[in-house]
Amino acid sequence: MQSSESLSSSSLSSPTSPLPAPPAPIASPCAACKILRRRCVEQCVLAPYFPPTDPQKFITAHRVFGASNIIKLLQ
Image (cartoon, rainbow, N blue to C red; front, top):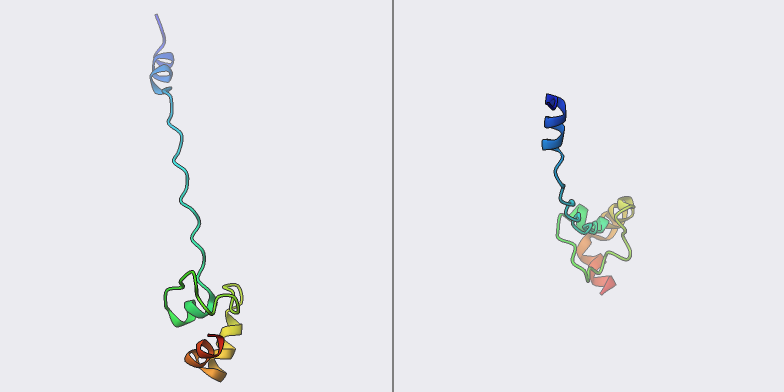
């Protein structure tokens, strides 16, 4: 006779399916788009100049020039 422990452990051990791959990491929007609350597109003019790690850089430029003027200058 088998003990109840061996029966329960054998019935619980079933082949497990591998976990699905995690989704690809979403690129963080540039600091300018974060502050302006707009969607940062792949061809964002502001992204090379205002990385997501340094939002203070855009805040300062925005106060002096305004977002519209910064975009016009960069285009």
